[in-house]
Length: 150
Image (cartoon, rainbow, N blue to C red; front, top):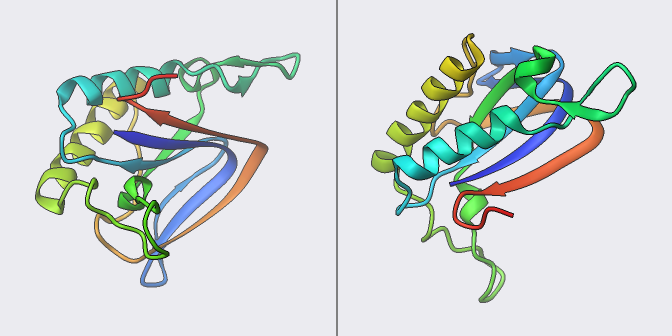
């Protein structure tokens, strides 16, 4: 499982000219599921996202997690995080899980994240053509990979 984490001042996702998810200060998560991901990958990612100390404390230092800061989270499915650009110029998506696998895993991720945060996590619409708007704060952008936990 891969998640691109962006610290944001605000973010929103639109589908067919309708805003379907929107947050204020917090984290925008672009979430990719690999065909071989398991519940262990899911649990690791939820724990890592909720404990990352990348939000500012009173002194302006990145020292608070989204839980500690009371920040919001917006999660958007993003199969392109598993693109391979090794051969040629057209990306291959073969490592990305098919919708029948990735949609339930994404929904479980959102459910577990909501439970860990104690509030609902808005999302985009799985498989839809989405437009994501954000104000990146910092900018702070991190790539998390459950199979390569750096």
